[in-house]
Image (tube, rainbow, N blue to C red; front, side, top):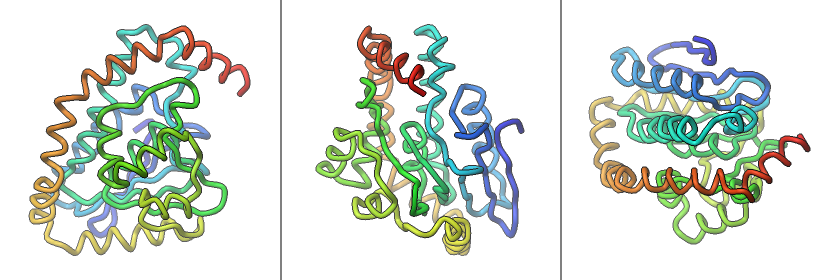
Length: 250
C-alpha cells in the first residue's frame, strides 16, 4: 500500500494513515482506504480495527492545493468516493476505534466521527469541522453523524463556530470518548479495541446495523443533493478566492 500501514495482532488490525506530514486526503488515498476497510470487514481473523495517523497528525483533511487543480466533475467524483467511504465506515460490521494522535480537521473529522470510539491526544492536537471559515459547506452525512453524537444544539455550535477544539473541549461536547496524553493514545485505543474484540462479532455487527441503519438510509437519500450544493459553493467566486488566499498564506 502507498498511503497506509496495516498491521494485525491478536485479531486487531491497526490502519495507520501515512501520506506526508499532514496525511492530506486525496483521491488515491481514499481509494486505498476504501479497499482496505472492505477487506477488513470480511476478514474473519479481524475482530476490531484501530484507525490512526502517522506522525503528529491524524489527518488535516482534504489536499486543497491538489483539488484546486480539479474541474467540477472531477471534484464531484472525488467527493462521491469520499462520502461513500465514510458512509461505509459508519456501517462497518466490526468495531472501529479512532486513535486521534494529532490534528483531526475537516474531512479528517468526518472520518473520525464515523468510527465507533475516539481517543484523542491532549496538548496541541485540535479537532474541527472548520469548513465555514473558508466559505465551504458540509455534507448531509457528516452533519447527521455529528448530530447523532452531539445533539442538535452542540452540533450547531461546533460547525457554525469553525473553532478548533482541544481534546478536553471535544470531550466536553461528546465528540470524543477519551482525552489522554499523547503517549497514552495508542495504548488506550488498543485497550478499547481489545474490549470490543472480546464481544461476539456477528452480534456486534447486527446490533450496529440496527442502531445505525435507519440514519444511514436517511443520509443516502440526502447525500447526493448536498454534494451538488457543496460543489456549487466550492466553485463560487467568494469561496474560490478564500481557498487560493489560504494557500498563498500557507
